[in-house]
Image (tube, helix red, strand yellow):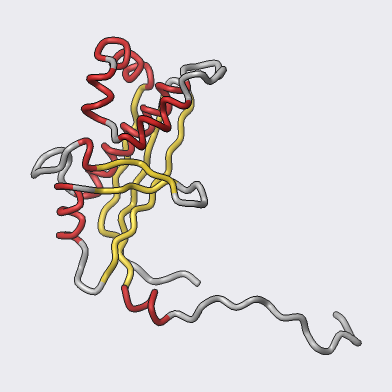
Length: 166
């Protein structure tokens, strides 16, 4: 069942993967440590040995870079008012769906824009087609009560009258 909610912010970003490739070559670990969380670094570095036609490592970093830009726009601040690069990190839900984990100033801003009695959710989509990578972020708020009072989904039952199937 879909829950009613409110959109708090929308952001998107498009980046040239070659720009990230150049930053990785020029600044190396200093660039990586300044921008990306440990989780993002681990995910991107696993792609380093990929046999993909284009640099999968740089593409993975580029999508996460774009996600941070998009999230900062959705928060309504950009990278100011205490919101820093490493305050936002792309993580995956158990289903594999990407979302953002916020800390520090980004989390404080999210809490400030979330109405009382609501819980914020961050929806993320990432894509790339070399040489471009894109991220789209929607921050929504849903009532906390609906998650607590909504009945648990039940398993479908088989009809008891099977003599006359349709």
